[in-house]
Length: 491
Image (cartoon, rainbow, N blue to C red; front, side, top):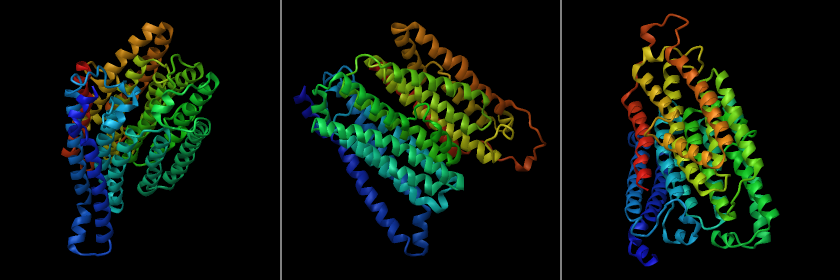
């Protein structure tokens, strides 16, 4: 097998070359920015005005190279005698051969899609003074590439922190109210508390084992007590970042107060990278059966968020609780200690990353037209803006798991797994998702779509329906929710 992989070494190094390209681009962009900011000429102003377009161009080139790498990896999968792209990273030798598993492909794919939408969303209302933030998206791509290629637990922790700390700067620079800065404090304190827990687990392993290499830790025999304690430390450490119930209030606060562009980045990518890190860690312990405490907390989080969906009048807060509900469900799957459940969790992770991006982007579209996120001021969307109304209907179809979408595939696999293992637990989760969560979520959106206006609307104040750029973004996200299903059926 390894001789076959070496035959494709030039192709498998594409991702490494792509990362080098991003590093060079980051240095050049930063240098150009430092130079042009010192001068106030027509040429420098032209560069600054088109700075976002330059970043988007480099972003697109890198994305095309990544897609080429993915298609090569997918087409040569059978030739390399790899039956599943998800679990071959149990053998960490593959990391040294530039061969990424499906979990790594998913998290990089989300970084590209979410970053692209976030760049365009921030460009609408906050780009005049914060165009420098576009450099951060190139930086995030570089860090996520080295994160998925990390060979040790310590590297994994350091690279994740390198993702997290600039995100705090992101909120600080793009926030436009005092409450957004207060939310940034919550964001910093809670995520760093989770990092402290993770760091304590890493330091214990360093002191006790003396090595944090994945390949070494995979073959190290921890005692049952050590395994249980370390598992809980990492569970809560990354769970706070997911966020796990009852530590989720910082996420609600940040979503409500931060710009929609950052909400897209936070929900669509950053919390997903925390789940990815937890996934890499549980592979080290080879848990064969679940622990009852993590399962109970995740189910309580799903129930709490589902109930709160019924009483929300802020559309963005509604989506924040919907995110908490589904992230607790995804985190639950990674705690069953079963390869089937983890496989479903990875697909669910991809589906929710794209769906949450679409939901927060639609909130931004509504805000630009109604200047509010309150249901008391958002009404009759289907009549006033037919294309936007259709987009919201499409989002609801994706959220409810229409056949042929990623979420439908994940939900069917989830039900099959639960029916095979525990019928009672399957009934509880289906009841929470469908009869509580999905109905409450759809009820609020129906009020926005078909609610009657409480005051007379001046036709001159009605903005146009979806612009061409907004329509392009919505179409991209719909396509991203359906296109990966073809590969899932072929795997």
